[in-house]
Amino acid sequence: MKKILSFALILFWGLQLSSVAAQSGAKHGKNDRRTDVTQLVSNLTDNQKSRLETLTTESRQRVDALRTQQKTVRDSIARYMALDGDQTKHLYPLFDREAKIQSDISREMYATKVRIDALLTPEQRQELQSALHKQRQKHPKKQ
Image 1 (cartoon, rainbow, N blue to C red):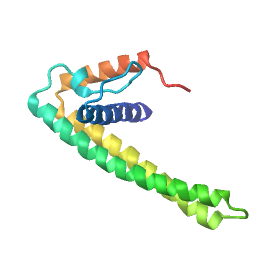
Image 2 (cartoon, helix red, strand yellow):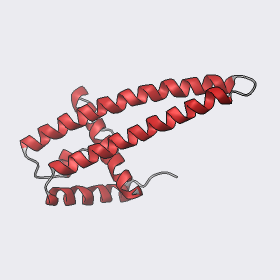
Image 3 (cartoon, rainbow, N blue to C red):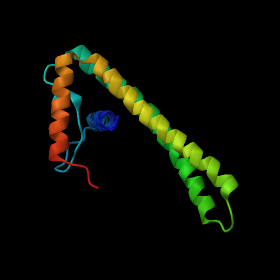
Image 4 (cartoon, rainbow, N blue to C red):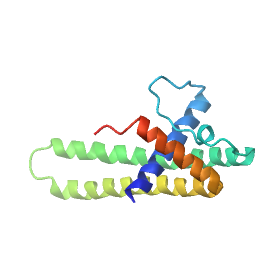
């Protein structure tokens, strides 16, 4: 499960960031770790590329909305944490709300991974998994 979620997160954010970069005309920097499926899978059709773009754009919009909600909740948590006295009745519901939003973000990222997998042939999925595995080995997560 952890492996699937890691794959989904890497794939999702790579697609998100590559789409933003493409739209803004930004160039990848030296330390940029964006993952662009179209760069990792060599034989995508124009239809697949178009559908991937649409899928990632829509997913990014949903995640951005969730992150905006998350920021609002975190700001509220910070305000209550700064107050004196027991703020349990205010904080516990906010903690639950933040956890729910984070869960929704993770679910969206996984759903995006599943949709991407559905667009790819078995060979393309294997090519993508191999490329992502190589990328993770080159750039291990910082602990």
